[in-house]
Length: 251
Length: 189
Image (cartoon, rainbow over all chains, first blue to last red; front, side):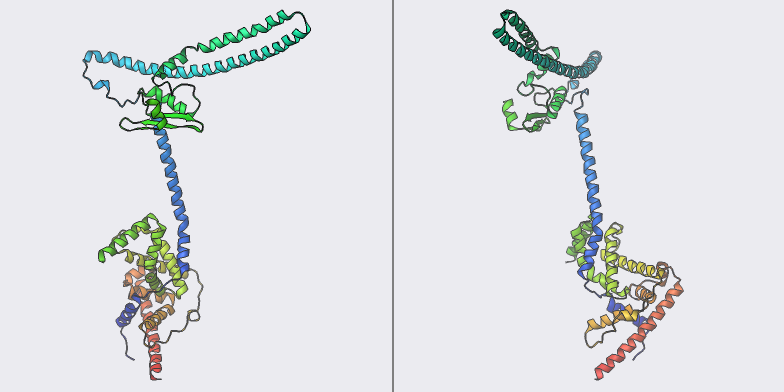
């Protein structure tokens, strides 16, 4: 047996053991992946939070874009690019400003009047219903009177009175007041789509867009159907998307 | 060949940074055997070695962003394993339970001709060393650390590191002598 130096011993172990390999049991990886799993779940949670944040920002942006009372987003060539004499510049500016102000006030007024209008309609309907029910009661009375008493004419006269009332009210209905007429004028561009009152979220968006976007084909338009309302056309200037039914309407 | 290997390592690194489980598993499969070889030298037995391997790989995946691509990826992972072994040792030093190692491990296998068996015997010799000797011997003789580095890592003096190493060598020499004697006997018969 020969004596080995310290270096020789170190060298021998290093050479033999440095490249030593052994296959671990399958359990090792299972434990590692189990240990790492909660981390990946946390990651997916954070990504969900980011998604939510992004969609909120997007919604806010769309809201700002469609907010009434702002100068409308015009995708056409603007008038200001035309050369104008300096003296005339100030007057139109002031006018324009007034126009915007009056436009926003007008919009609020319209909204308010629409609400009043709706209340009126409800009231009217109630009155009509009351009158009709009274009328029916009177008819019953008249029939009874027919059988029982000689004073028939008086009862009929009595019964006729509410009928006249109904006729009057109906005429009031037909000649609807100012604000609605004003709206109808706005809607004149595309009467097939924009008739009727606000029934859904789509209608509200349509209404607001109509205030902001003066073009024939609006930046976004909703159509009502049985299952609510959906986007029927989008017009981004260069890019126009339209559903088939809407296309048919336009042509 | 070399470039394709580089691409593979870059892909593995990228996937692990993203926390992709499939890439993590692939990296583990590529390096597990090699790293278990490292851990085995620092452990008393194969169970402890696998435990170290597990701890080490969890650390690799969690601290993947600490890898600055200054050296090789494999080299970095190997260092993580060695550091894990050091941590395990330090924890053991704190808790004062002493286990008689000779009972835990089988007697060294007799070697005849197979080189592989010889490696296993040498490994067994290292594993049978007491924890302090084993750690210092591994770090100095196999990993190539200096006594200064070992002293820093283990929180001991350089002198303590040197004396641990020389005592480890003495034990190993005795074991080698015993093994050679056995070999001689078996060859004569």
